[in-house]
Length: 284
Image 1: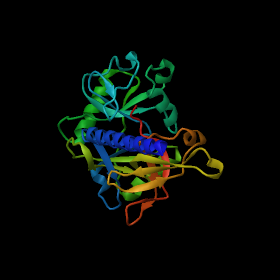
Image 2: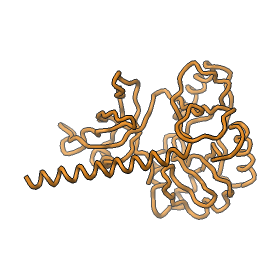
Image 3: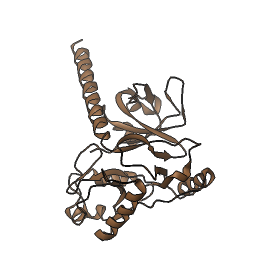
Image 4: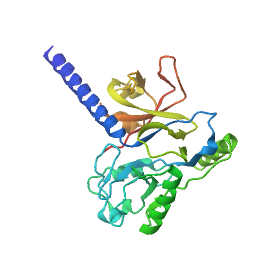
């Protein structure tokens, strides 16, 4: 009985810690721009379009490289030595389909030079800069060109004429191993928080939720993770039981972790349909 009571207290404490971490992450996320999901019917000609890179979001404040939650990224000194003083927002990126290798390199407290020499910093925004997004894109290109840093790159932005052209571009990117597309209103000023001035377009939808519990596996997963018990920012709870490797089932995401998952649709109660684990959001 004493052990059961202790276990319940420990579980409750972990839940409280997880909620606190999630709340802090949401507060930090309010200081950057986050995308809404693309819906058909918008006037795509008003947007600049770019590839959605499968990397680690990183913000440069002029001196330090940080995750979107504000944690310092331990990049080698040479990697940021010649970065401009201007604040930058972008994605640390290795290559299409190489997120796990990238995450492993970025998460290390002591960076490995050989790993970082393969990483690029792709810039797509200038925090708090004036003017429209189209104007900021021109300034990004000028800043990157002036810096002359091989691994500092401006994300290519382009326009499409209509929905058909947008969908065709999406198919091309995905067929080449890409993740999807991002659409940013060309006339938008710099804003923060989740906003429809920035839209993400993928073949499958994705979202984030917080791990609030684990369920034990059965059969071939005996002694391993069966499913994660998740809670969305809106308070909807569901179980996430597919998409894991054997290694992830043996060492599952901790309670309080923020997980990205894919899904096809939602029920009337807001639960994701056909949800599948994608990754733990990389916040070190």
